[in-house]
Image 1 (tube, helix red, strand yellow):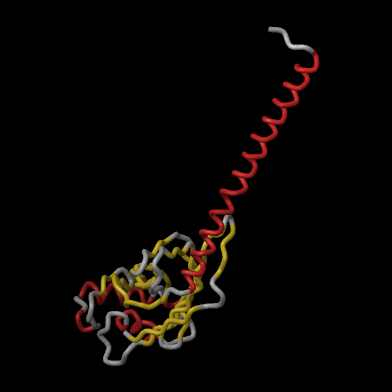
Image 2 (tube, rainbow, N blue to C red; image 1 turned 180 degrees about the horizontal axis):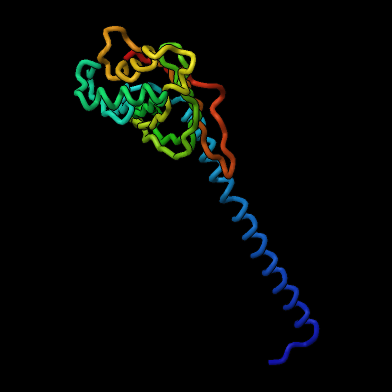
Length: 211
């Protein structure tokens, strides 16, 4: 059946309106989806601010390539290890590495998340290292997660103004072998992704730990 001119024009107008409505609906959906994500991530920021940060100690301590076990002292070194440590001291290069166990406790009934951490580490009043960890971690509802933060540094560079005795003893102090306790101050600023932007926790969180 043929349409008259008036009906044809009416059909064309209706088709254009339908296409316009579909296009508008798609725009609304595209705008709405990121907005929902941002709202969800904003809620994660609030949950992150309620999390408690703590230290669970250190592990996997390695000094000048020597694995130091818990409670180990200088007297426990064998002849080969003594030579290895002596060579490092004479070369003015004393690499130290260990995992700093950072615990994040989430008291909320929903997941909290961290996308990055800026940090600095101070031991016995001496600032050893600062840096950042760019990795996402999620902490489940009403649970805790331990983040093993790998610390790598050269003690001679970090403690250039200290004497050799102080420098060489620090690694063994981290094993808990020394009768004098080690005071660790860990300063951390966590971040969370909101959209494509990283938002920082206001200020640094200071965590004190005695080893």
